Length: 103
Image 1: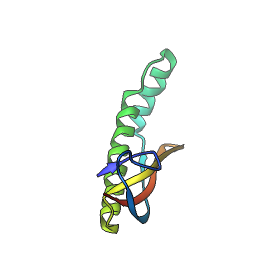
Image 2 (image 1 turned 30 degrees about the vertical axis):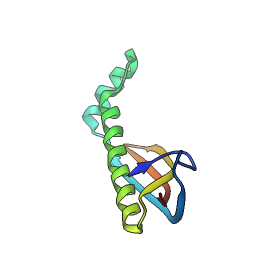
Image 3 (image 1 turned 30 degrees about the horizontal axis):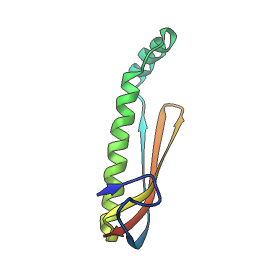
Image 4 (image 1 turned 45 degrees about the vertical axis):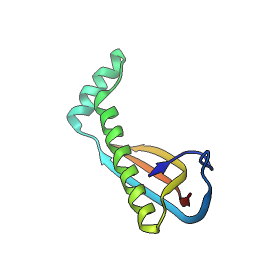
């Protein structure tokens, strides 16, 4: 399935709009990793455990968007967007776009 952040796909025609597809995942952060990340933030550098958690979240959200688009009869998703919000001890990743049929 083609997923793009643009409104169009080069060399493809959108022949039908199937509608909005959305997905989200909320994950809690590990207290042990929070402590280690807090120490890491003092000296600087990437917080690899959080990066991995975010990458896992993106994979899950993309899979769910694809499932919704397929259920709606689409074969592509345009105007894909992701939003991340972090709360106390949790993070939420939201993805959305428009399921379409392209030829």
